[in-house]
Length: 322
Image (cartoon, rainbow, N blue to C red; front, top):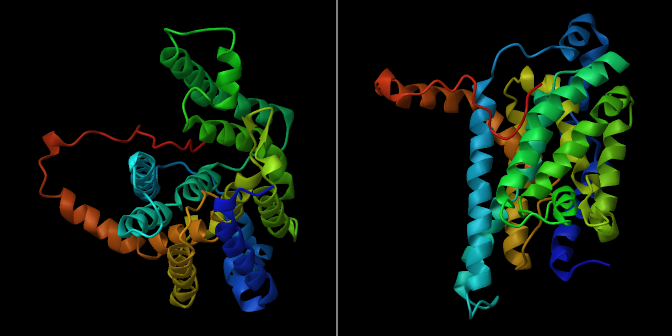
């Protein structure tokens, strides 16, 4: 059964998906088919296993934009819930909905960045053990500690259930989703080179988004509807790590972003975080202006005394990179 508020969003995702699947030119751009046709040559094969040894601060910038968008989503949601006379015939409705929906690229952007920044691993028991061990120490243990801290005055027999279901704090559902992504990542790597892997991943996430029974299992958030952005990230890893500006692709992604926002305004409904086309469009548009952003960052930081700046070389924004 669908929640009523999701219907306009469902229409948009399935209409765009149908157009992309049916029109070869759009399909080539969205799935980066032309780029990955070059994986047959030696140079591309070498890049496909590229290990990140240094920090790419532009991803911090992208994730920083997404973090600001998360704040906007929650602020507009709280305002909507607390506004007594809130209805869809008032100007405030359009303003609130616009700012909330325009920021709905956040979760896909986080997941895409996570997929891009994960170093590829060769499928073996030793490598899988090392990968899981890192995630336990860097994510699982800190998560448990934070949960205990938040519930320190009201620990009960339901604490474990609340922790694994993300009910201790509303945003914790994302932590559980990313845990599930990392849990299946070594096995997904085996399918990366399969021809229809990305098509099947999109189809699966669209199905899970349509069927709300797949959103959770025993109140534990399930990764199904969020799986595609994560897979899209590590599938297009080489494309973004070796990114080169392509003006012909810019208009495709700009049109998707523009269409999403026009549709959301006309539909007069609150959209969800499962934006399978708007999310990738935003991260592509940010990369399109990567050089401009980097030059601006250098321009604004140079006049600031070094004593006032902190060393962010060890700072991580929400997404682990190993």
